[in-house]
Length: 286
DNA sequence: TCTTGCGGTACTAAGACGGG
DNA sequence: CCCGTCTTAGTACCGCAAGA
Image (cartoon, rainbow, N blue to C red):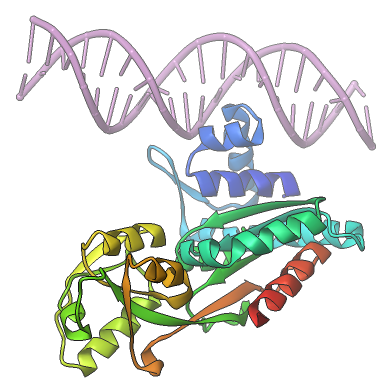
């Protein structure tokens, strides 16, 4: 078993296809087939189920986590030997749609200005998906909404925001707003749980949701009178001044939105990453 | 409903190539 | 020269859509 064999194995596992893995790796398909077979013969076990695609067997799943760690360790070793005092190299970050829209534009612009040699990439996704990517070393760090209980992940609270209830400006009072449909994120949104808990305390158990997957779409929906929502106060300040939306405060214990920066505990703290975290912390203090 | 052709998939055999 | 790795060429299987 060599590193290349493991890379091939990982590519097939992640693509679920020998052909696609071969395209990504720059090999012909038959070679990838042969290498996978070789690995299976060497380990004397079947790693994939073949059925119009390649699906990991339990043994394959087991090997997958080892292979990820081995490849990751190798990359870390490489980075450790090459990490210079000046931040350089690739920095792969993730953020929820909200975090990426609210906090990152100015931080990233500033970061890019100071450290132009870092190849920055930002992926936006739901918190759960980002956490998975951190677990599998596919991202160096990510901004997510919920606090995690996971030994393999290091997390730090970086932003705390006040959430407010918003509606179209015509809404007269909070009771009227609460009986509107709520425009919320599609899934895994902690704001949604907070909203539901609070609404229950004021006697509203049945909530109609309109699901959106982007904060801008939610706010535009509220402006056009589709319903209400619970959003970070700072994201609608200017809209409220213009009279496009109306906001209502809700009790403090339900209105705090926390954003955490997470990374894998075994990922190497490169200069590029530590400078980014530094900037994140500076910006969160303002 | 059955047949046929097509596209996508994986597998095999043979030979080229390069490093030790 | 041997061995491991890779490519080329060809085969087989499967699912799907179109047509009889």
